Image (spheres, rainbow, N blue to C red):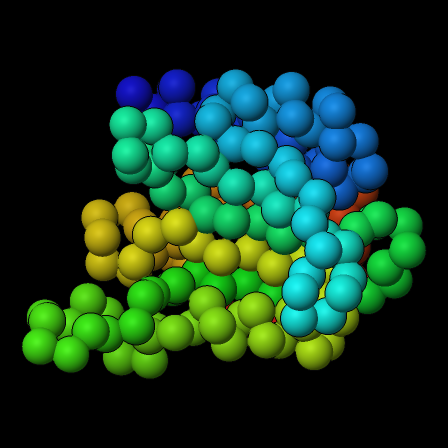
Length: 171
């Protein structure tokens, strides 16, 4: 139901904002309501600490496939204004299997991770569904998608986002 999706997207965005502002306890409360977690990790490639907002599987599948959101941690120590976004994530093609992606989307998530690491970016957002998985999974063209709402929260100064100084790189 669309109203339920709007409520769930709002909870996800509120969880992102709480994490972005450094409050993982409150972030976790919001995220749990939509089967997401906020977990601190050390990036093995850089040694940098990050928080990953990740959907949890329910019965072996991701119910919404709204994506993975990475925040450089702790937030106040990262002065970068760069947001790396991967709106068309796609796994690699497997030999002797039908191609799962069109065009240049294959491995774009790897390009996004490398850009996030090498540029010491503040955020990395990776869409959870392939561009053509459903009619609404091409999030670069869906104004109401969870991915777009997280993008807006990261950049909109009215939502304590980066404002005009924010720069977006799409892989």
